[in-house]
Image 1 (tube, rainbow, N blue to C red):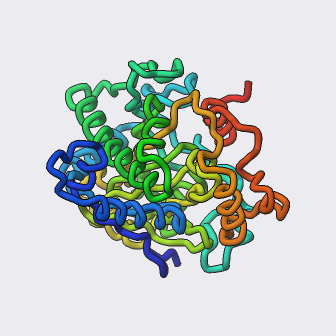
Image 2 (cartoon, rainbow, N blue to C red; image 1 turned 60 degrees about the horizontal axis):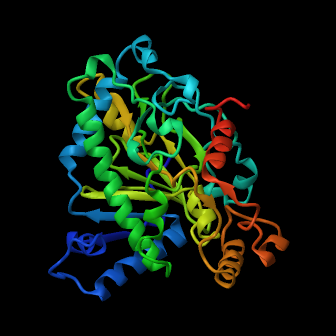
Length: 385
């Protein structure tokens, strides 16, 4: 039976609006001290180191806006397939518009799953195409674009021309603002300059990327995998509250944890790029999305067909495409944390020689654009050239 949760809780860090103002330079009256900022920063860094994720309570997060966003996407996804297919842009690797169901395919992580305890196994370790749909909406600043895709036009569905752009940009950019603020606190907590991550993210190909899954479909049952065991290829992902839950994440120690996002909060999870930039001090977060008993009960009580769709509220933040993915931390610190990563992580187990030399993260540096290309090819979204 699929559980709605297991032991273990992702830390919730309550970050006041004044802390966010302080780190962004807007707190001219100094409502909070450096000590308060440093305490928040340490808590966020510890959560990312141990869980690869953190839940942040942000007074600026509007539940009304999140709910309006989810309802808009439910109305979109409930449309007939042939209408949604008009919004597909396969020729640009689905990085704009709609990705149909059974297209995204996670990498095969069966070997990784073997290292996990029996009670913490992914629901599905072998790779199969996910049954979810997705919409990709660029939040990138065209004025600082570093790739042609950054200036590629977004797709506005014909039936939603009235409120689509305002809703997508409004909610997406609010999530992105919170993510940037959290990145500043994370940098402080890791002993780096506060703006080190923000500078790398400036001009990145950030994507509002909600998923849609029809939980009322006849083949959907308890335990149906909507997004198979995987990690995100980008720098960091931020989630508002989804409509039906079902997200599970794995801690550094290999424990499977239900990711509950309380009202007024957001969930942030580490991607592959931050692992490379921190030399494994923060590891990419593995996760899956599964249909739970609670989600099915909610679906059975749905008053209309649209509200049976599970919609996520997701933004993928990327570093700029011309960023070289190499550790930002000095060599001695890099080596120490690489050894810690080897010894404490059941999800990331390089060879013993890699542990001693920290070469796991000191391989030939790769440009972010090349890393993303390789990842898109690996999950069947881009063709091999």
